[in-house]
Image (cartoon, rainbow over all chains, first blue to last red; front, side, top):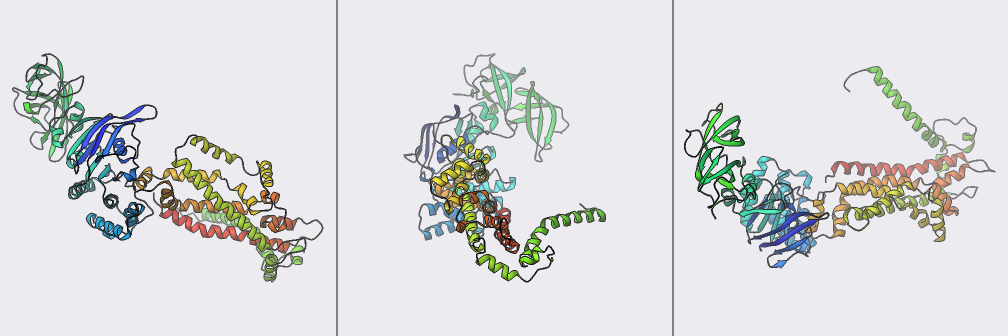
Length: 359
Length: 281
């Protein structure tokens, strides 16, 4: 078991494209770290550098106390689960799992024992003699995980392992991965663009964008107190609404002339300066009478999601979405009054996009 | 098509049958001719049902030399077999390795190397025959199997075929085997080779027939009759200047010459199709 430390890790591709721009990150031993971000944010590149599949252009990667910059993937004591599973199509499930051990000259009975055990844990014992093509997507995914488990590595690396599965299976496998990781206690690094996976799986959530880390924290920290506008709009579904506003005074901002109170606001912001006001669709109380700390919304259309409804429209000229329980508000409503809890308002600097909360 | 139009169907079958006859009749004629004696063939009224000379013709053709210093055809078949197998297997080995290098290794001038191989497609033996002959002669390889096989081994077609196939294999497979501790050679042996079986089978069929049917090259570099291939043998049998052509022997030889390629196609086709159906990347 070992933690993973990244120290200003860079990846520069030919043609001076900087895919990873100096990422520093400490991943504690035994924790489940999820790298999340939109495609092209460098998360997969970072994972592949940890795996040793990409060279490191700058900085240092340590697994445990060992610097692995120049170590071959096979000698880094890691195991990786790929998006398309990357099972050897011509080998049986058993051989797929045993291959890595055989290459390491593990004794035969030891291989047998480990493969059987992994198969038992993953409930794929009946398929050991089959070829991967005779398995369903979920079963293949299990075999890919089995191949990682039998190696008893220091670190598991997952590269979007669930994105080829259908929605139902994805939820099921997500739970299984989490349970397995807790049971084995192996440090895991998991790359995904799916924020639900990211939120549910991680002990430590790393949000990336443009080759840089935007925020690191527990899933609830990241959700409750996004450090940048990017994180605010990336984590959470539907995404956070961002409205243009101006500073009125301490604890008060105005949006389109309507003043709302804010709890978490940096001191010393000059009145009249521009600010971005972030409100989560689920944090806004729709309905009720206009009053202090409320916003008027013009509704364009309504999406029915079953348990909830999404009201799409405009507040102060900007796109806005509100989530409300079904039946709470009539779907024909065209004018809504939104009451805002001061504790649920997020403020961002329009220039730097950084959070303007209390220091 | 679902519609039932008897006339159209009749025409379709008629066309097919005519086509088959046009292709198959000469072959049938050759097989029939190999069962008569020379006189029956030469008088111009050869019957279209089998004669009684088959056993005699085939033993004589295969195992006994003839008048015009003819070698037994069995020996020619051995020569042809060695050449065809050598060319087919050699081509497969060379081209799978060069495709492996071109696809999986990053080295300077990789693209150039590939294009140079590709360009050789434009230079078949016939075009480069003089320099090739000169080199083979200078190396003292005239009248040897090596001389027959080696110049025909380098294959742009094969390299191209394997390259295309390798490029369809997902990179993750290579990465997975890297993590599993397999080096380049292990990856080649344990993963790439087993996955390439169908491509190898396909290439083998094509190249075996290509090698078996070689005419110009063996004609040039073999002078000893003990090195004759069967294709050359047939040619020599039917262009005798001062003796009657032994048509029954020539026809028997022609039939014999057809057998190995047909066997290869029948046998390998199965593997080929089976592999195509089963393989999944």
